[in-house]
Length: 290
Image (cartoon, rainbow, N blue to C red; front, side, top):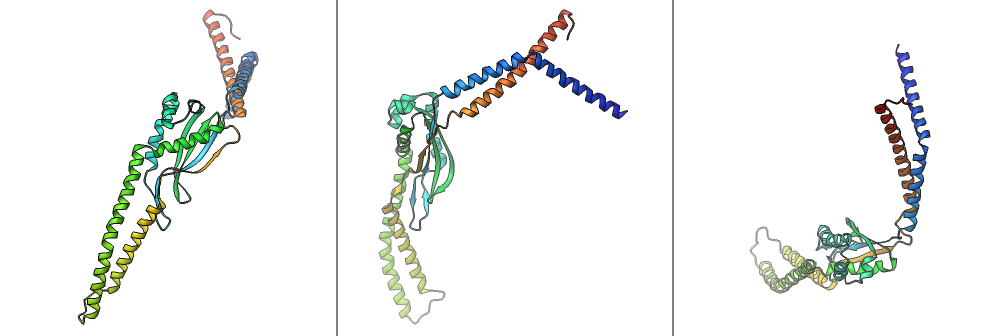
C-alpha cells in the first residue's frame, strides 16, 4: 500500500513538472522577451556608465613617538570617522560647492568624485595606527590631489588642532618641571648619600643605590620628553597610497550576467502569472480550461 502511494506521489510530481514545462513552452515569448530586454539593458548600462577608479590609502592617526619607538595616538579612529562622515554625507547629497570650499578644491575635482569610504581602524603600519581611505572618482589623475586635501582638512579641523596643541603644551610643562626639579634632587641626593655613608649610624632598610635609580629614571623621562619635542608630534599622514590602473566600476561581466539572470527569472514569473490570469478568467466566464 505504501509503495503504491509513493508511486502515485512520484507520478503527480512528474505531471506537475511537465505541466510547468508546457506553461513555459507556451509562454516562451515572455521568458525570452524579458531575458533579451534585460540583457540589452545590462549591456547598455555596463558600457555607457562612466568608468570609476579608486585611490586606496593608508592614513596614520595623529600621534607622537617615544624614545623606545612606541607611538601613542592623540586622536582616536572613532573621532576621525565622525569628522569624515560629514564630508561623505555632503558628497552623497550633492553639496559640491560646500565640499569644494571645505577641501579647497576645484568644483570639477569634487564633482568627479563618486564616493568616500573609511574603514579598517585599529590596523598598524610601521608602528603607527592607520585606517583605510577609499576615494572613488571618474578622473584618476585628480584622486591624489583630493586625498591630499582630505588629509589637510583633517589636520586643520579645530578639534584636532586643539588636541595636538594641548598635547604639546602638556609635554612642554612636564619637561620644564623635570628640568627645574632634577638639579635640586641631584644636589640633595649627593648630600644625603654623603652624610649617610660617612656616618657610623646605619639606617634600617635604606639602600643608597635607590637614590641613583630614581635619578636615572627621572633623567630618562627628561630625555624621552626632549625626544618627543624634537621628533615632533605628527598629525594625520598618508603612509601608503595607490590609484587603481583599471576601473573598479562598473564590473561589466557581473552587470551583464546579473541583468540576464534577473530578466530570465522575471520572464518565468510573468509567464506563470499570465497563465494563471488566463485560467482565472476562464473559470469566472465558465469557459473550459486547458
